[in-house]
Amino acid sequence: MKVLIVDDEAPARQRLRRLVDELEDFQVIAEAANGMQAIELTQEHDPDVLLMDIRMPGISGVEAARHLASLENPPAVIFTTAYDEYAIDAFDAQAVGYLMKPVRRERLARALRHASRLTRAQLATLQTDDQPEEKRTHICVRIRGRLELIPVADIYYFQADQKYTTVRYPDGEVLIDESLKNLEYEFSPEFVRIHRNALVAVAHLRSLERDGSGKQFAVFRDCDARLAVSRRHASALKRRLRG
Image 1: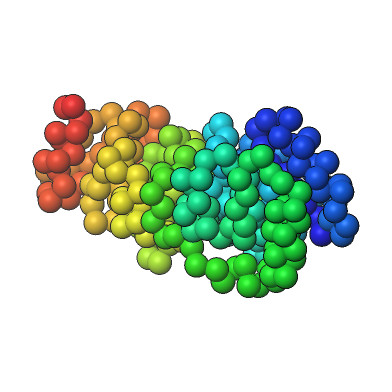
Image 2: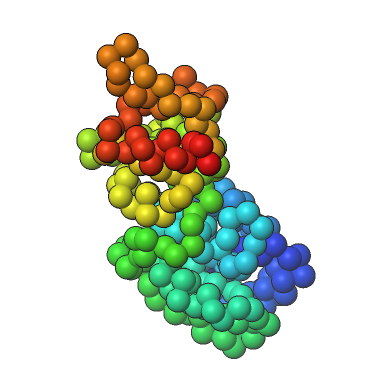
C-alpha cells in the first residue's frame, strides 16, 4: 500500500518514514509539509493511505481531509497529532484512524492494517460533517478534472444558480455543489446575504448604489459585477457598510 506522510515538521516526517519502512506491505511514496501539498501530491501519486498531522500552517489536516473526500477515489486518512481534543473532528472528516504523538510502531501497524481492510468505495460512503465547526480557509472546486483550492478571502460572492452555486473570484467563475444556506452558516459574518440567491464578501464591497428605477445594487472594489440587493436585506447591508 502506498503511504503519503503529511506533517509540517521534518523530524516528525522522518520518524514516520522510518516506522513505515519497518513494516511489510507499506511504502512511503511522498512527503508533504502542509495541507495544500497533501492535496496536490494525492492527485499526483494516488496514495492508498495518508498519515496526516492536524495542526499545520494554512490548511489544517482536518480541512485537507474534507477536501480530499470529494475525490472520486479518496484515500484513507489516519491523523497523527499531539492534541486529543481534535479526535471528534478527525473522525467527522472521514479519518480511518487517529494516532497520538509520539506515534508507536505497534499502534501505527494496527492503524495501517485497519485502513487496508477498507475499500475506497467504503471510504466514500463514510458519514461526513456537513457543517464543520472549523471554518474552511479554502473552497475546493474541480477544474479540468483536478481539485483546486480557492482562498475564501479572495471570493467576491456566492450566487445560487439553480441546483448549483456560482463562486466569483479574481480568476473568474466556477460552480460548486453547495447550498447558500450552508455557506452562510459557515462563513458569516464575513459574508452577508443580500438577496435570496446571493451572499457577498463584506471586505470586497465598495458601495450600495441605485439605478434609475430605484433598485439597489451591491458594487465591488475589484470586480465588475453588480448584484441586486433585495429590500429585505438592504438595511442590514447598509449597517455593515457603515461599520
